[in-house]
Amino acid sequence: MRSVAEFGRRARDADAGKALRVRMPDNPVDLLAAQRAVRDLLVALGFDPSDEGLVETPRRVATALTELVTPLPFTMTTFANTDGYDQLVLARAIPFHSVCQHHLLPFVGVAHVGYLPADRLVGLSKLARAVDYCARGLQVQERLTIQIATYLNERLTPRGVGVVLEAEHMCMSLRGVQKIGAKTVTSALLGTFRDDARAREEFLARAGVQEKTPMPRCGALRVSRRECFNAAHQLCDPDLSEDGNRRLFGKCVNLHGHNYMLDVVVTGDVDPSTGYVMDLKRLSDVICDAIIRDVDHRNLNTDVPWLAGRIPTAETLAVAFWERLEPHLSDGTLHSVRVWETEKNWAEYRGGG
Ligand code: NI
Image (cartoon, rainbow, N blue to C red; front, top):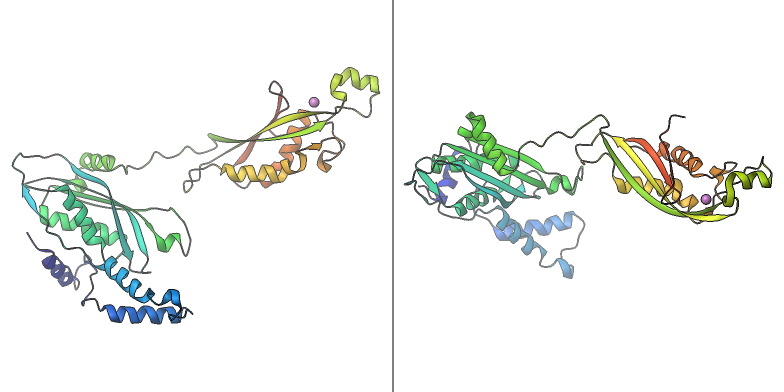
């Protein structure tokens, strides 16, 4: 069993020739120098470090950064596997945080760590401590993943070790491409997990990181958004006499109102980055901008320029709404527009003339 200090030395010794290394400080932390540097940074960024709210900032930042890059010492206690346990041992979703060495910004996530025991076992809390130990420092996620796996492999000499990290990087969420919530997933599989497909599958399945079933494509999915509005209309063909209109449209020749419902259905491929065919909030915005704003609480015969000259039946509305919507859909394809005039009557248009 090696002490943490020994591990640190070994890691630094390995710096020269191996990719695997813990990026620990080469020298003891000089807190005063760090505070001076933070003060200089504030000045360089255009701030006055003597401002009341910034006076203590250099000290706080230096202390916080020191904590983030200093591994917590612990002893990796192992014990004999006297009962011959030979199945998977897995600690799922261990929270961790580290600091990206490229931007000095945090990355935060969870680690799934498992092993197939041989002669030695380790307390489950030590798996979490091993993750913390390797994570404290300036890191990149890929290297951190391998380091945790190698650290456990060297100390436990198990039949297999698997480590999967899922993390959000602030350097990606808050700056640059600004993809908030995007997760980076890395894995390191050693021994049996690398060589045996069934053992690997079991580990990944129990860790909950199996490759997801691909989403169907080619328009197999439809999504729908319902919007409501009320409006008045009267059904009247100007080419017919009053009696003719009354015979054709009955009581609907008189101005009256409806509480309309409008169902807009969009079809398309699922965007793998969002899981959506189309963001329905955005579809709602498009419907409101193109249609609802113009028709809600209006007389459809006289108040809506793009309905001028058309008898505003539900059928007419379905076609006209289609014409209004289709040019504004950037995701997916418009599948149908259904106008509910009453709860018993609807008209649906699917395009195509
Ligand atoms: Ni009506």
